[in-house]
Structures are given as structure tokens and as C-alpha cells.
Length: 300
Image 1 (cartoon, rainbow, N blue to C red):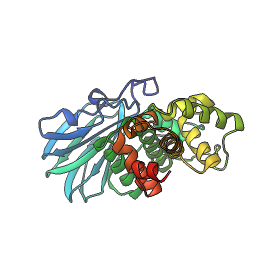
Image 2: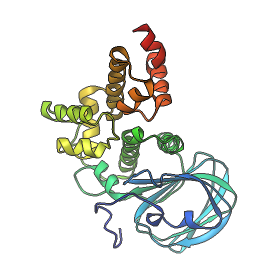
Image 3: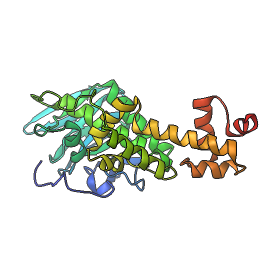
């Protein structure tokens, strides 16, 4: 990993943590995660024109999802040059701490995801570190869907989606760690091993206390003394739901109580229960309950 201290505490990831591709004149960004407070991942969706350039090593791992294609990409590693025609859905992966020499031979829409090494190692767990290998045109449907889901979170950002974004990043890191780990030791944190009663109580109480606020998975994990990846796995084993799903259900239950027992305006109910606005609450209730806040209140 060169001289980078990738496991050190960090603030929001941004352009300075990337390879430099996104700062070039041939890139036309459409949306990014800048300003959303994401500490472990930076997401950018853009249109790229053909180019050939060399970039210095970056402190983050770079994963590029091709939204269009096929397009030819050339990549130099040492003294060798590899050429690959990559279709839509293809993946370009470049590990942190390595210079990048790449040529894009056609216009292309892409999603770039820059991942902090700390979250990758955390997802890997105990038993040594995991190092990513370069990929050029590989295919992984799960990674593709996770990257598209993160792009969707950026496109329709709401502060209450922070837990969901953390969950997606953690799942993506775990997928990469699993795929690239060599000689992985037997899984020590079995998915069947749930939280202790005290850990579950601590997480539940924090969710209830912070119901109206964004709540990163890292804070829930800290309250239980676990890493974010361990917490997410064990929480699901204990409850059958991800932290995001569970928190959303708590918020929805509280909203139903307020709609049933108070005359607060629906917009106020939404904000008090952690939804970004009335339309957000309406979407969730329609999706989960098949009704709207106004119709629920009338029926109650």
C-alpha cells in the first residue's frame, strides 16, 4: 500500500482521495457524493471522452462500472500492456497505492466508486490483510447492483438514507474482500452468530433515541463494541433484518402511532420520525403498507 496510512481515521472522502481521472477536462460529471458526509466511499457518475493518461497512486481503491459499451480499454502494468473490449456492466478495478496508466478508446458513461482500504480490511475481518488485484472487464452481478444502488442513493439523496448507504458500502467491501482474499482462514464471525442481549438492547435504544436523525452504521456498531461489518452480520442474524431495514420499521411504526393519536401535520410527523419530508414518508407507507399517511389517519 505504499506510504499511505489507509486505516487512519478520515473525514469525508472527496476528489483529493481519488486517482485524478475525475479532475480531467475530458470528464463531465453528473452527480457525486460530495457533501453527503460519506467517510469510506466516494461515488461519481459521469460521461468520459476518449483519453490516454497516467495518474499517480491514490489512497483509495478504484472500481469503475461501465454503464455503456462495448468499449476498448488499454491498461499498462509494468512493462506489459493489456487490451480488453469491455461491455456494459463490465468492471475495472485498480488497487490503492499504485500508479495508473490507462487508455479509454471510446466515449463512455461510468460510475466511479473510490473505496477506503480501512473498510475493505474491516470487511475482511481477522486473520491478516486482503489485497485487491487488478481487474479489466470482469463481471460480477452483485457488485454491479451494489454500485448502481449507491448511484441511486446519490441521485435521490435523503439524510435518512445514511444507514442504507453505509450498508451498501459495507456489503460491497465484503464482496471484494471475499473475492480477493487468498488463503482465507475459516470464517470466525459466523453469520449464525448473533448479537448478545445487551448488544441488541444497546443498538435498539440508540435507534429509538436517534429516530429523527441520520444514524450511520458505524455509530450503532460502536455502541456494541463491534466493527461495522461484524455488527451488520450479527444484527441480521439476531433480527432477520439489516440495520437499515430495522430502523426504517421503527420509524414507520412511530409515524403510525403519531398519525393515529395526534393531529400533527403529516409533514411534521414525517420529520419527527426520521423521514426527510412528507413525500418520503408517503413513499415508504405506500411501499410497505399499501396506503398513504392521509388515508391511514382517516381509517384510524
